[in-house]
Amino acid sequence: MSLFRTLLITIIIIVVLLNYRPDEHSVEPLHDLLEDYQEEALRSRYGDARSFNHSETRRIYNLLLSEAQKAILKSNEGTDRKAYTCSKMRFQARRYARSRDGTYQGPLTEMALQLRDGYVHGVKYLPTALRKDLSDSLAIQKPILLHTAMVVRQTYYCLAPTLSRGECPSYAFLRVVRGKGDTDILDSCMRSNKGFNDM
Image (tube, rainbow, N blue to C red; front, side, top):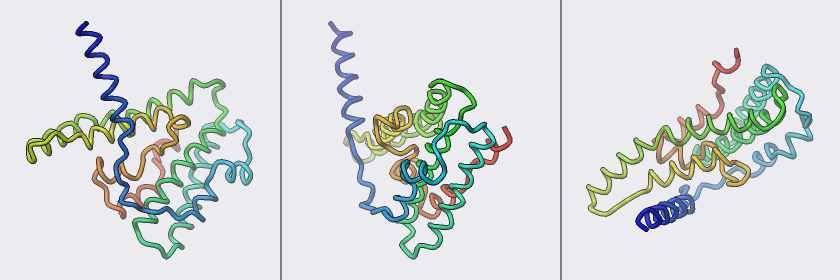
């Protein structure tokens, strides 16, 4: 009976953590720029055949990031709106580029990449989030699970992007858990990891 109770409590906690939606500081994205990076818009511009090898996949990804950088830098909006929009654009560019990679057939590659993303942009930060929440809870003498909830939610976003409809990594995660400012987010979202280009 105690095993059942523990399992039930664990499931309830996970459901609550997944449904917790922290404030993203009410930042409104630049909708006109985002429209150009929706999956349908990218498919109509660049095609949708799953025929690229790894080099071509990286090439299209870097091209999309370069275009995003130019569009973002032309904007006269505030840094927060540009960073939020750029974060969303990068996620869409990554999803589109991955959808064109035909190196391996079947869902195995996509599942492996989602597991990687779940670790790199989620699970990896769980110990830090737990320490931060424990520290904050002790400081104000109330239990707080903000950072832990965000890490659990981010992991879910990365493992199941289609189901969750969330970005990996999300703007809120980068701000709250990673502690990045808008300028840092803007700088990092316009660069790809060059180490993957030479694989």
